Each structure stands twice: as C-alpha cells, then as structure tokens.
Length: 132
Image (tube, rainbow, N blue to C red):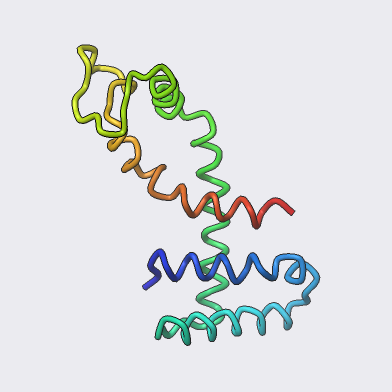
C-alpha cells in the first residue's frame, strides 16, 4: 500500500527524469518504471512493480488535474485567506466567532485538515512535474 513517503519518492524519481521521460519510447518507459519500482523497493523494502508505479503516478496526475479545478476558486479557501490577512484567525484558534454560520469563522486547524488540504503536498510536488 502506498504511503506518503513512497509517493514522495515516486514523484521525486519521476521529477528528476522529467525531460528524459518525455523523449522515451514505450519500451524505454516500461524500463524506466521498472527501475523506479526497483529503487523504491530497495529503499523502503516494498514490493511494487513498474506497472504499480506507473499507475500510481498517472492516478496522481489525474487527481491533481481534477483537484486543481476545485481548489483554485474554493470560496472556503478565499474566506480563510482573507481572515488570516485581516488577523481574524490565528494558527492556535480553536473557537468560532459570533457568526458561526460562515466558513470564514472556522479555526485554521479545520481548514488544514480538510480533504483539499490533505493533498496539497502532493499537488505542490505535481506542479513541478506538470509544468514542462
């Protein structure tokens, strides 16, 4: 099962070979993913196949593209950033203000633990790869 450390290693290995990867043919890409799997397996004691690495990476790219459509103009994120800029929220905040019906009054911790925030690390890493 993929964990965050394995995913980070997968992205880093793919990122390091980004320019070469785009020049590879089908059989070269097969060997590339096989070598990525071998490296990750050696480093972490896992048993991934090259196809597992390829499928996982492609799924990350697909999810990144889908998520980026929603996160860019997320009203919740815009309200949170506005309140942080105005000083209405702090990183230690744990209570809502009087108007608890709006997302702007949620504590920062709740924002950071939302599903969109949970994948922000992966999205930031994917941005480096997808901007070619």
